Image (tube, rainbow, N blue to C red; front, top):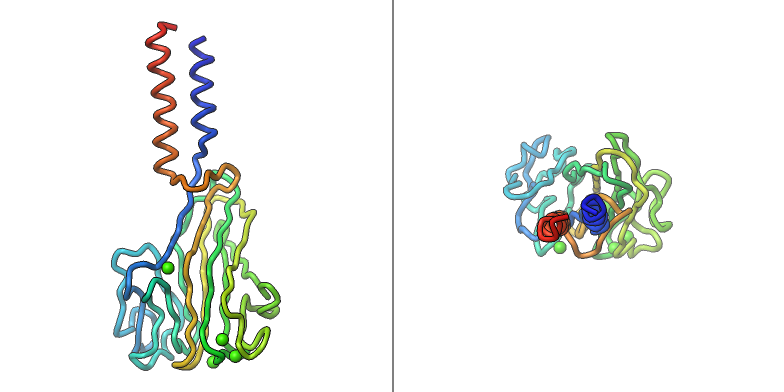
Length: 228
Ligand SMILES: [Ca+2]
Ligand SMILES: [Ca+2]
Ligand SMILES: [Ca+2]
Ligand SMILES: [Ca+2]
């Protein structure tokens, strides 16, 4: 009987899901980089990653004005006239618990972006990169999204998603090129489910582990109370 109760408690705890959803909503304003820069992101006049878990890489040499930036504001990460490819880099997520998936919102404003402007979403599973190409028919053979597709107004608002990611680690990189002060590209709501096999919507890893512990504790107390 004792073993039965213990196994039942363990099954309940597992059924709650040792799952995790990690969401980046870019709610802290003024994090990232802004010009003038000379080469690397670290060379930028504005450089601040206080309190965030992500970083920025790329060629900052074309961010020559103080109005050129890749930084947060108004609840999104905004790229304005970065001039050369600049990339947002997520933290490295542990996805060893099961198949993972992620999504990200990629918005742009105005009709300005040309076919030479782009966004590339690349994911690294165990360090191996895969770039999502031609998302929803709005990119091309090498880029996730490019300007002037489906028309001069460009891609507008897109949620780019990828599932069935199996491995030990996942990192997401989103690279952006735009080339004018009238061109704005926005990233928001990077949502990573590190274990979609047992995902319980709305419950964080902390909550599910806490509930699992309570179930185990209750089982142990029941064993003690019934003198099994
Ligand atoms: Ca946001
Ligand atoms: Ca547009
Ligand atoms: Ca356009
Ligand atoms: Ca452009």
